[in-house]
Image (cartoon, rainbow, N blue to C red; front, side, top):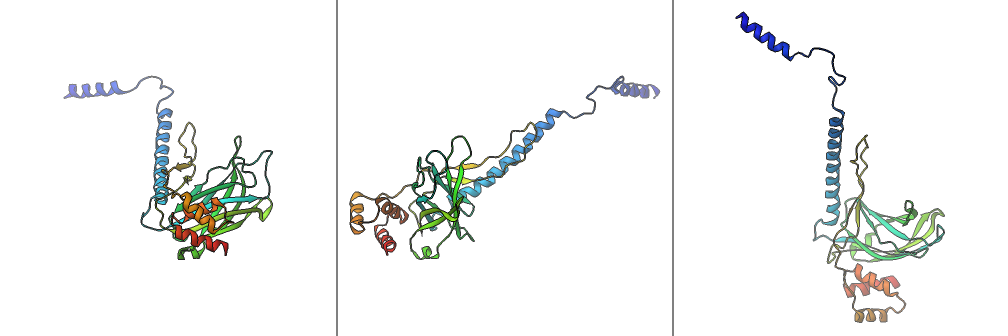
Length: 272
């Protein structure tokens, strides 16, 4: 019995560390901690990105049988060109949680034109369209030129197409930065037709030795099938409205989803 006890004690002594302790004794491996932090942060970033993508895609997809809010950004007349060269303006719209951008009008200056239509599903409690005009810059952040908030007209839900110039606010003061021309309607489009939907994600806090941080996610849907106005129909409509600009006729035609009769009715309302 004693020999067995002695053997057990000898085995235990062999496991005991004898001598000076190393400098890293009982210290955590810093590299492994950093890796764990990066992994956890990346998982959190991926989770937020997935949630934001799901929310953004709901703005794009939704129920295909539902009517949509059609917003056409036609052109603007600005009071001042900021900078040494002609500005390159583009428009950013926000409708509820969805954000849309037009293409940039190179050298548009004070009279940029876009003729861009975006379509979005109505959101509960959303009754305004937030509009911002930016000057696209190459070597610095894009500059905010003008902005306004447009109430969504109730008439559009009765089949009326609204075309109007809205005052812009900016450096020149409230409602003194110029005007923007927009067409707003409501109906079932032949295709989704959404443009450059942008879902902005919050920036994740940055840690040392960590590269996992969120940036804005841009969702580019496939190109929509825009209804085309034949040369014959365009001539007929222009004969009826000789003072109406050709681009405006095309824009109203697209806003009415290619319906010629609705286009004529909308133009009649515009000239009244």
